[in-house]
Length: 448
Length: 83
Image (cartoon, rainbow over all chains, first blue to last red; front, side):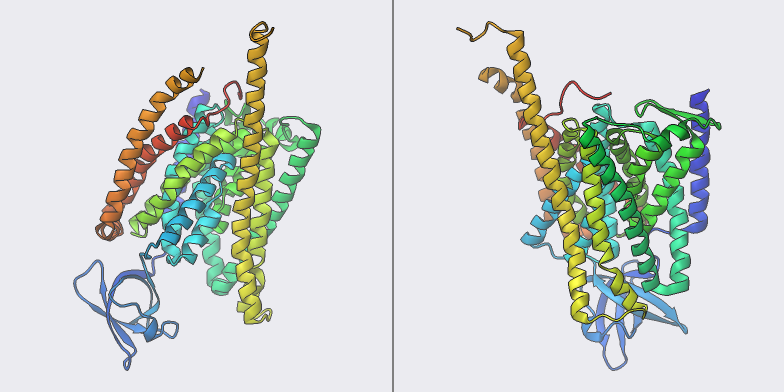
């Protein structure tokens, strides 16, 4: 009966999220064309463009944002277009496939490895630094998002499989959360669209940054406080008071999550999934609310929550990849280069969780969240300036932009150091315990 | 004792070598044909199957390589733990 209820709820959620998806749209941008610029007519302010899906060249008018000198010729480009007064304007043109030099190769592999390790350990992470990294290497924003998304689901699949084998991932909780998160993404996308329409690009960026900073700082500080509290007490884990109260609410349908060891009303679980999806649509890191949500609202341990997040990341990543691949924006070379290291990193991070206590996962997650918040916070004055609400010099703007980027790198580095340190310590302790046990089993052996 | 360890690691070594060879060959092929691949993989529509299937393929092959490599290096999960 319970299983039947769960299946009915899941089907209902899939259908509702699909209908919202159809009504709301979202995902990859639509106002762009892929193709090659054949020539530029400087006097007329136009360019001849051969779209990939046609053999007929077309004339694009260059907008004020795109100078004739900046039009890349004879290279596959992604052009942002706008139709105005019956003419098609090219607003922005970026080379689609960046030239992969050795240093770019190495950069992607290193970031992929640490990002993978972080994912395997706390269930999410990597995306926040991978997308900006690819963009700083020269990939267009949409291609960077698409290529990262396409690397996310295979990585999450391998990580989820490993952690399921260790008995940590709750597949059912993951699926329920993922389906409700997909619906949440659509709500988030529509909120974003409304804000974009009302306040434009800078307003939308400001909104995203404020949500990012507020959510990450509040949740991050709480998780950090909790991690220190547990570390001080030396206890492994504890269920939050809120989760215990919510578990007493018996509004059907009730759902039992075996690995998490929780029985909870679907009316509690689904909103956590929705919030995860809404945040994922807004700030691209849903896991930063999904994992704390599963810990403090659902009542799962940090180990189970971070493992289950990988199941969610797989489902959402697959769904997202499909959207981006349908638009033809995935640069598979970038995807596979990152994957070459992250598939090893994610397994290392996953096995690392078997050597650490629950609070270490919380500690890593809090540290990453707070440093990433600094990164996004540094951008707020830049957006305020674009909105005409503040004035800062170009030099300050440059400094803030590099603070933002390097904070992300610091977040990844810090996480890498804490995880490796905790793992090495745990492995040494486990080996010492094993050796002591072996000595106890054979007391006479080796003694004179 | 040393012989025991090397005996235990032998299957990991062979598997690492096997999956590593397939994975490396696949990566070499990818970069040799990168122009054709980037062009066809970004056509959109039904061609979306290309990047998705390729990502799955690499996750199995390269994932198996990674798993065996970590075991070969002695990096394995703690045995007696968790619910």
